Length: 430
Image (cartoon, rainbow, N blue to C red; front, side):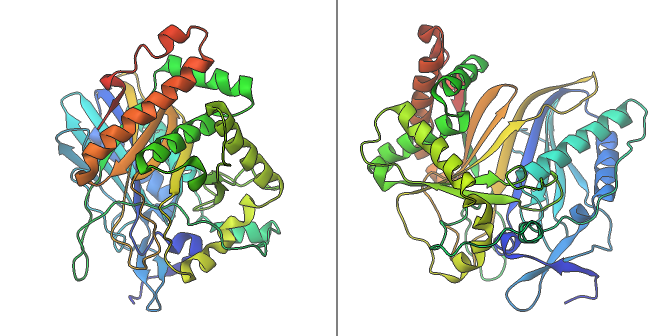
């Protein structure tokens, strides 16, 4: 242990991401005149206002980790010439040195700008708020203004936030396994390093996404319910299982689901978990989606989801999960279009998640890879981060997923004939 100043030990909800050194990237694709110097200055301003981004992790000698203040220089921005699809080209990730990075990959006027945060210190809602602040600061600097950022303290763990609100652990059977990164890497004796995953993607058009929203309003379900139903139908076909043999586990943002609301960056991983098992003979596509939505509403009303983070120590101390029918996904919701100066145009939003081999044996691997659902620019996107060797299987997965989503879109569209017109190879790729 060094003599650096200890901020605090990691809570169980944070510790589960430290053993595998899980980082998550939030990437904006832009075209136009990107100013790396202004971007670096904006990044430095954000890190200065949010000291958790400049912290680092170190083992505590007892199987856990502690957050430490980093006395060195703030995290640096990397700028690399290459394929913007390789979001983390040039990035140097090491939780012992930094928990945050900014990676720019340029090809002429096209670039990907990726904010990378360690999952122990921020979930998607937290990191997306930081991403919005980063771009707002960049826009200020590009226009000759100094960013005025509110200074922040260190965020709390979800366990602490729940305790303050009087939420206690239910005396119930162990909760389902918590979703985490599932990228596989070659195992070495000490530090095997990261292997960047490939990404398969299913993206709907604006028209198809609007049709899904209309169907959800009409049938008393949500886009999340419809997307989740499409995922389950796809997994049942590919795994050759009945729907009732699947168990769907997904994360739920708790910030607005507790009596005293929690700020976007007030906590690190403010996530609960919902579990859904389809009943035999579930019936229609819409019936499956409505079942997912109704189950979530019932679990939230009963307070079940809100206390699920408190079960993480029980899960971590139990046997490694083993269930061929488990499906894990996370929904980042609607991603806001960032504020950029006039000489830049935002064209897309992408994600990436990576981790090292799980030293505890408790991180569940699933054949579908890591599934992230989001909506950007009014287009639903489902990204699947997977090992290189499963690329062929993922193409089949994405085609099936697209066909189910297309069927939902046709049900919601005023003109079903045109709803599927653009379901071509251009709408999903790897």
